[in-house]
Image (cartoon, rainbow, N blue to C red; front, side):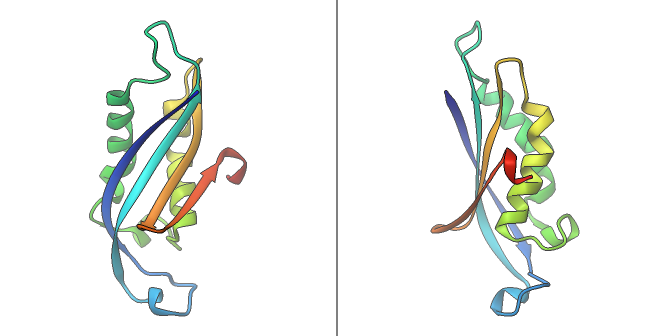
Length: 120
């Protein structure tokens, strides 16, 4: 079973190792989805949505929202942002009944990157 929670954050970045308009400083309203895979526990939940929200806010959004992402991730493509978020959350959301399955980062409404465990 999969449990998913979406988030939104605003941030600026520029792509140092890229030649095109994205090498200049610019910003996005990013969408983030965090998906856990597991089985319902004795309370009937894979994970408490409120607890997941608190963990993501504390570990990820508190650092990325309204930030210059290059200060955190040297080449902040959607791919590398999703990897960074996966690594940041992985051990903090793992339980006996579930684990982090997927992180998706939308840079625009139509463009996103997906990170799974085998990608890190």
